[in-house]
Length: 224
Image (cartoon, rainbow, N blue to C red; front, side):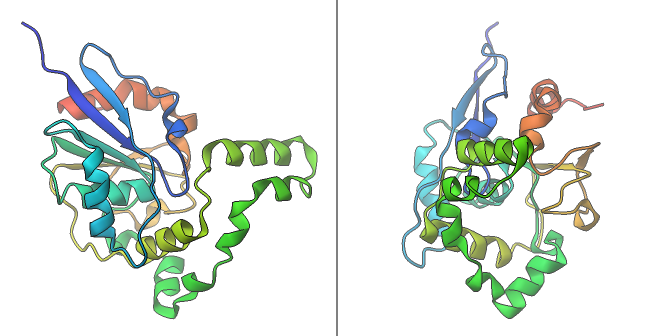
């Protein structure tokens, strides 16, 4: 008996493009991968309104939504507009209470409004001032994966993260988090599948774990 294909939509993290999922593989006879991309927000657009616009890219009913970092926040907001089979949040947070203290302080003082996000627009300029192979390699990776450099988008995205108001985790949500995540330290995370040695970019360097376990999580099987 044939099984219906499960459609899985992947949303990258802040400023990142969908190439961060280049190593993710799911069995094609069971799953269909769809890659979502960031679009430039409208002036003063709410996160809910933005999520509703991204939902227009969802063509199938009852999909699985997978989001990394800010993309994890976004897919949770998207699930408030469409019916989903499951939400999988990676290297992110499920409520405003899981944000680290520095982000809560940034919200209270509105310091996030003064971050020099315009500097992100030109990684090539930084390359001139890096020294050694490691630093040069890092710049190349930034250029490859962090291609959404529009200042309006970056200003908007940072504000949406630090000012996110979700108080309770959404039902049918799975949270996967690295024990060495420096952006959202695991000490503030209340309930997750914790990955040993996982950092904020573990979707890239722990892809073997995801390729093995994402199908189990989507289908409701236990993960060792």
